[in-house]
Image (cartoon, rainbow, N blue to C red; front, side, top):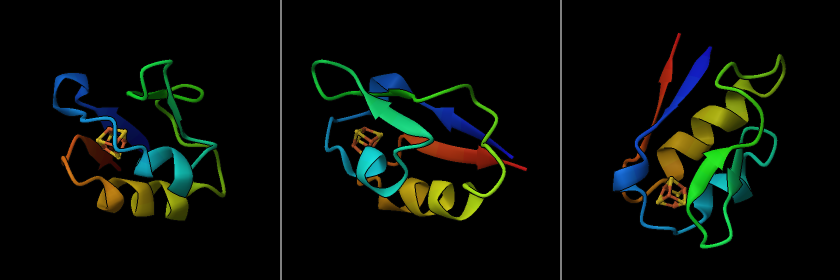
Length: 64
Ligand code: SF4
């Protein structure tokens, strides 16, 4: 599973990094970036999906 980020849509709410710190990280201004690469590490799929759903700006997605 991979995650997608639409950076221009991110509003720096930070929910994603709270939900899935192993997948999403925040830059110095609070905007999303990948914690690793776009491939979600084994075992973190469920929290990655939760993070995607937690984004109020709908800036995140998953690709199976
Ligand atoms: S939850 Fe959405 S809007 Fe907030 S930092 Fe993450 S991607 Fe950006």
